[in-house]
Image 1 (tube, rainbow, N blue to C red):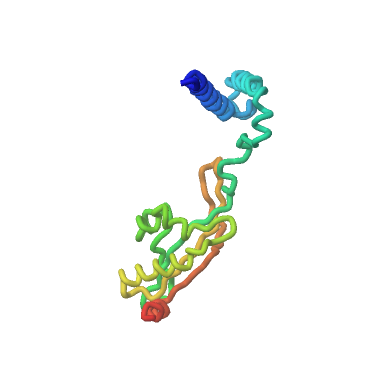
Image 2: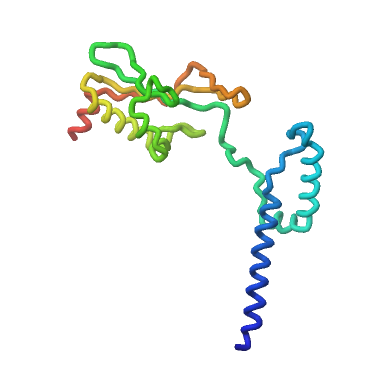
Length: 196
């Protein structure tokens, strides 16, 4: 019973500390853009808000610096203007040309769009900064098996990634005309593997 008053005090102190952490975090993380990036009419307001935040946060800066609590990195730091778009093509019996059957964001070529674009499968085929991941080869084998089973006329499946350059300000993506991460799987080879 002697500790009851101390316990009550601690409950209030703890609640105040939690509230302070939330308020300071919200204030510190408020997305106030640099004044130079704000529209001309809002620049004085944005500048004043930035100054106010800096003044209010000044006593807490040493704590943030000590524990490295500030997010000074970009959220999508790996996003680059150079990206890839996967092409899935098939070669049919008696033909020498490749036929495009799937390409993202292309309604004319959307075969198996649902499973291919499923978020958990996309990680297997979507290349990162250092190329494809370990699941890329098994993905191509699985995909070829699915296409061979759907259409006995398909002799080969080719998967490759078109290099693009994104133009965010224009909202466009331009092809560079080159491809990377090319994999071809022929039906005969796939059938031999499937028999093992």
